[in-house]
Image (cartoon, rainbow, N blue to C red; front, side):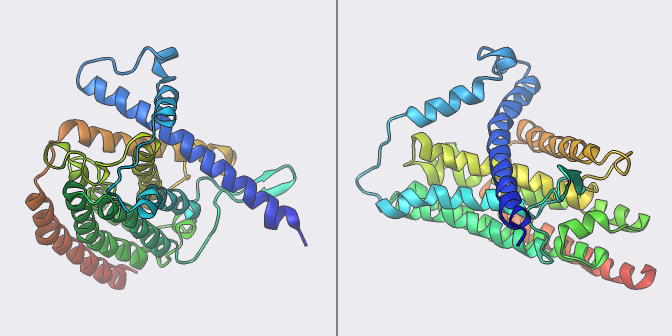
Length: 334
């Protein structure tokens, strides 16, 4: 039995993926604070080490060593489990995303993804749904009206925007003929297919904003109405875990959009220098993350009725029309 391929290499890849995502989360907060500061004509973090790069480390130490307080009125087992349940799906969803072409390292062919499952898109949707349970359980177990209201908003928002997102993904499956994210990157597409998929980028991106609870759809935690919403009763490292899941979800969503719309790791000279694929993938993900932050800095928060109306009366009919036209184009053009 080849233990290296079956056990050692998957464990190493898992550790690299988890450490990479946790590190990326920390510096995504720095990236966001710097960018938002530039949009608002100020400096952002600049005191902790060079260019403020030590700020994420300082924030992490502050959260870890802050006194842990568990209110007496909460359902303690569920209250403590909810932050982990919110974080874990954000980490494991990345397992099916190909981040680079296969390369020869140390005499072995290494695939730069954890698993190439033929139902990767369904897997991503299912795992993303599990993350919402963490928010709902956090609100329910907190035994607080504001927390309950934030959790209910999260579940309604999730259902409302998952429908148009799922319909758009079904359109992509019709175009590419596969549910595998690796297959979507490596299978050549006709020009009309790439252009038609790009048409769906803006509605898909709007759905991703709502799925990750990002501004202007950060209503489950809107502080002016709900006093931080579902996380009102959380503090210290437990509060940090919720934010960690939100930012890692942003990274995973950006990686999936990079794979669906921008060719994943593909780019000039990748065939000659496969390592360039990793660079292209990273740069594309950073560009999509820039869009998340740009929207936060530019668009005010929507009202809850506007959020729901926009999904059910505009996005869902639009995605269904897109699906119908996609099916016709596939039959007519091939």
